[in-house]
Image (cartoon, one colour):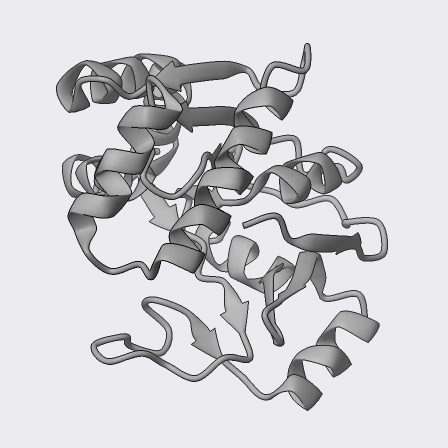
Length: 211
């Protein structure tokens, strides 16, 4: 999905381990890689939980999958400059709050943010200074097969995701936008590439937690 995102007021300096921004279209495998990362480095990484005004879906847990809030409450916090980035899509608001990132950093953990392409560009206008990594499928054909195999999409929603993915894949080629682009053709190889990309920060954070 190509969200319309708006930059909030300048992000205040945050202390703690350097965050990681992961971006990539639905079906690229971000969730699978994230789960492996969080499992293998339980005390090193923390996941930034986004805020949304939409209603929870079956099985979703507040504070784990999203912070489910009212539109009024979220708008109030946005107006107060409490969000790094935010968007409105299909009548619902989504966003990453400063507090969500700070809560992870306060635990001396590397904060992971799952952000779309426009959000990536907006975060680059702040002083958050994360490591930017794009996760991509090897081709749009492979991405389509993965989405169809899920059997969770209508044809209309699937086509929207594919159109957005095509745009994302093209935008990701912009020089300097990402520190690394990982083509997720094989999960284990992609995961190894992700770990190697974050190895230095992981080592620093592990040392910080021991001190």
